[in-house]
Image (tube, rainbow, N blue to C red):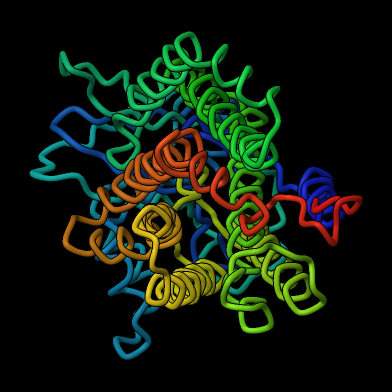
Length: 440
């Protein structure tokens, strides 16, 4: 498992998608691309308020005027209706139904998107006089380089906010999260370090759990750095955004490895052990094989989801097949581990051990089920709020799960006393038959 975990992390590092662009967009308006797709898709943004702004800068004015270049803005719901084949709209009819249109005949253009009673997603498309005709030769003309800024009004009503409605508040959230991590580190770092150095039955558990916690803290810090820069230029630091996603995925793999290592012997091997020693953790071919399969499956699904996700700030959301499979995997893991722990508590006579297992089950179930439950709860919110609800909710729930596990493994009334009663029957301890065998 130790080699597998290292390979999974290394694989994630090497095969990682480049950072996505922010809401300051740079590129080229292409007649060929616009003609092929009946309008070149430039981007989308969730505007809100009465003074939202779209600002475009171009250099080649003569080409833009000659091609009759225009930008068309559609509300997302209206655009979906236009895509309905049953209506049979032609290319020109679709473009004529744009809610807002901007003719590009100057170096800089500002378009105010106002009267938004609630945040709405707007799609931006480029089109020119060659878009709806079948002349391939005329459409092969010079492209127009551009820079576009999509801005929402700030607290004072000035269009200076680069965050869309669905991203607002995330910068402040990650700042508070980093601050909490810093304060907790100042208070508990020394005592935790001493507990890890003492060794004992909880030594490896604390090492793996602390590694996962550090990865989560690193993800929060990288996100804060990215959002701090993003708030100023609408681009941010794409590398830091990708690094935050990598740290989060590595933390997910680390926690899965820990929970499987703790539970695998309890749920699978217990049938082969005597009832007097039902909790001994052991690396049998069956438990190791299942653990390896689950870790590799989750790693592949997490990477697959990131490569298919188009939004740079919604890596906790599940908008594709990989995300749905991840939710199903987490539900199956929670049910499996919960059932295995229920079987143990049903036959356990010691009140102290039962309390330990129940508390551990709470941490496991919270970690695995927070994603699926929040994904279901988010349905009652508006579209622009769903990603934010899932992102903030998952981070908070998984932080609470880590607190539960830390309290459990550092508690002198639970794990420590259980280990003193019968250390050979605890998970991740060295049994008499495997004293010289590492378990990681």
